[in-house]
Length: 125
Image (cartoon, rainbow, N blue to C red; front, side, top):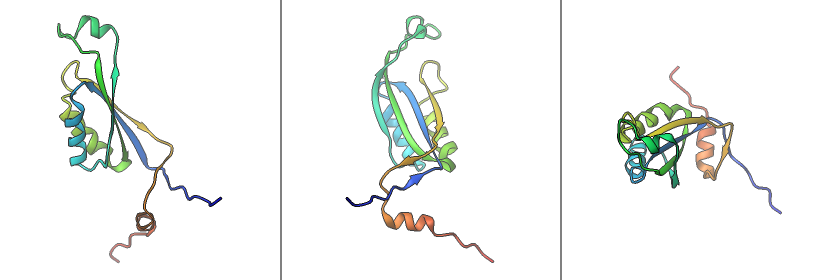
């Protein structure tokens, strides 16, 4: 059996955004415009007292979309802000977003990119 190399990423976090159904595409597009490499979106159902009462008299849909985006730690603020604005999360009942620091993650990374990342950057003397 051949030995497989695992490239471990340690400077990454997961941005999770829960929004009303139908809003995920715009949020993902906004995140990609500022550097997100990809996203995973799926449907879910929410529930709780807010759905029964509404916020400010507005009914809140229980159908949700959840967006997960893995980002480098130095990109968190830029991508998070763009997603927040695109999702109009400053409006009551539109959703919630949070960041989870990850201890490690692994995925396929082409060898030429691994080598490029491993090469130290030499600045001006």
